[in-house]
Length: 443
Image 1: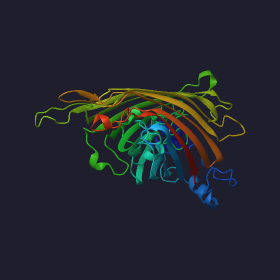
Image 2 (image 1 turned 45 degrees about the vertical axis):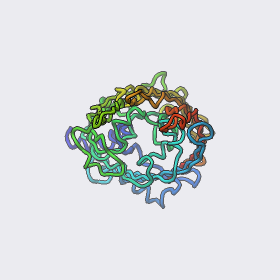
Image 3 (image 1 turned 90 degrees about the horizontal axis):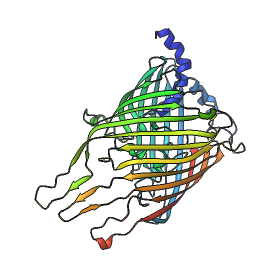
Image 4 (image 1 turned 30 degrees about the vertical axis):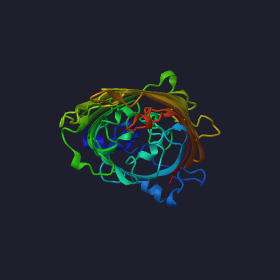
């Protein structure tokens, strides 16, 4: 494609392309249309509105800001390890720049994401492996603070392909219409927001580079992405010190729109391979001095699939109605302790005309856990069991920019006993019931 065609293509095809790129293993800005910040206090899309027109002017020049604050109160009301309540929160600032609209060059898009969390959660007290408050583990699990989670650039070379490089927020991968995100807007449990079987090999925030392919020029119909990323990235570091050719993850993913029965739906398939050395889950202890070195397991792989399908959609492609979703993954089982994973559920938004911004969901997940084994001089001990759980939520739109969400989860966790040196000190961990309340505000 020559330069003249590329410039003319940028205003049309690239605008269509970018919304679909949210399904890649990176954070890429979505510029389907200029955001609308107008309206009265209770009807506009953000709390702070249009900033006297300055915000709309910036958007027309390709610069947008999105700020999100989430506050949570959550408690284990029955079972688990401890019955306690905790509260916390997380704030995010997302900056998107379109170089074409800014008058620089066509096809370029810059993304920067800052986020930080505060307070505490009950993620470690419910007895499960899965995080019951996904929002609280970003940008760094069990740590308070602010980090630059994403800083990347995408450049489209034609209607069919683009390149991307930088630091990526990989939670955008494994996209699903009804069950996806960081616990801000839909489910709170990690197993119903992302595919947990993939977390061992692809860090949340990491350096990488990749390719985007649009087979038929319509990214909403089909899109394929390939990403090579550092297997040891962190949101709290730049990542350059951890980039090595023997510590990489390779991710290939494709998403296809299905439109079964005339209703919107998608199928997604992907595969991940990492050449990093991991700690093996099978460790053998000996009484002989110097014989207890940590056993390693070279590389890891996983394959995954998900679907979403509307069963009620009054206006096609409107994002309103409700439907079904599901996920599945299979891994090597060592070093990945999640051997198989599946989830199923129903979700929706604006299913009632009188409540156009309300959201709801009901989901279930199951994990086949390969428990680590420790073989000592006298016996072999395992520590985990398979895990399953269910969650239901209803998000009430107080305004388009404010959502209040009651939530309930029931988790039969993988941890069956508390860890203790003496058998008499071990306590059984029962099925946990977790209640929660979440407030999301868009600024």
